[in-house]
Length: 530
Image (cartoon, rainbow, N blue to C red; front, side, top):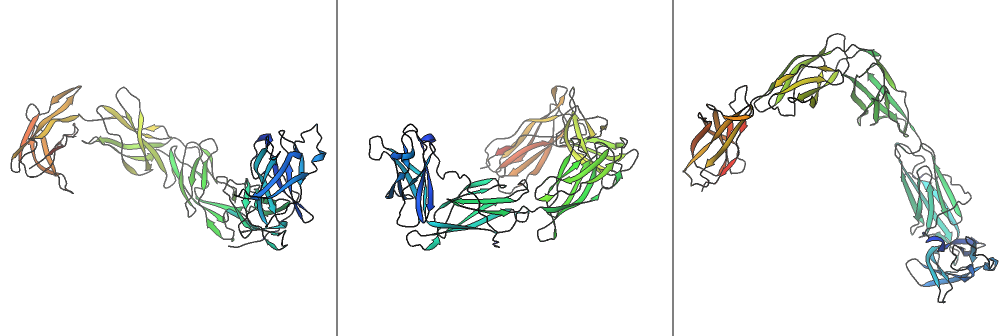
């Protein structure tokens, strides 16, 4: 990883939040002060429950309760008896500890008395002289190619006991990354090193980010510029002024590229907006290869713009524009034919074209297959795309009923085909089954039932029609097989005898329909052959 050292500057200390949260106005705050080669604890009095002269500071290692130093405050005689000296700051007696490091400070007021007050972990005592903080970055700027800002640092100090300069381990530094909206505490490891990582996205501020680090009286900062890349939009088609029918889809083909940090031009996947700015804009996304392949549905005439959506990663290129001339509403649906098969599938065929004018090559339109039940209103059952100048075949996902009307509608253009009544008479295989249940191999089985068709609101016997008998063996992987057929009698009933050979499922099917009736399947009936 490239480690680029940047110039770090010193400045006046800013206010640093305490490493440990307080508990209201009864919570004092402590920190480290060094002067003239001596280390002291600083205490900010924030209590009305006791006075500064009552305070003793107890210093111990993290995660241990053994007190290594106990110091009083100096200068408390300056606190008038008539005042609680709230928010006044006092220095402790000089602190001497066995080893360089970070220690915890507890505040004890009126020690050993019945009304003793103990406030634990009010701050840290960083026991080290003349600390020196240095900063470096993994990369000298932030950009689309380098969205992660990784700032590392090291902290060394002089051991107060041996005066040896060595890594200051286990101490906390407060940091703030202004434009990255990040702040908090970071802790040094055994080598006195620390790392802060901030990730930028396309909405991050396009400005230099300043990383600031504060340790006691030490302040260092490091600035990382935000480098925008040039974004390029090339649209090959459409260009100029064109005429296209309302509701048609004009192909838009182009490419998005960026000038990378290394100076080369590279493709980029990004959202692109397309529209007139009249509240009907649409969006598309270029592929990983930068290719933009989409379409624009003509809803009105005028200038249409194509432009990438905003991103702080890139400079904004000039929008591409083309003009849609005011066209006559010339789209037409011709040779439209709707059919419904015996399984209730509705299919339309036809051709999309124009009565006058021209359209760009590859222009398409969205067509809806509409349904209207008797006494109801038109609703869309689904849409499909059709190309101008070409024939189409499309089916509705909705099953047909009996007596409803169907039509095609050119979405966005107000062009409809005439409504056509599509539907057949319902049939029903009923009271069907195979008996007896549970027979010996070689015995006779009878498949029987009845067939009806609907006349108005009444079901009537349907005589003289073929019923096919199907069977699927129990064994894995077996497929349905037709075993025979029979015809319905004058009362619509039917029966057919078979020899029981193996376990399996039986089903009667009416599929030999005429053009006016739907097919129907009976229920599945499992028979156990012993």
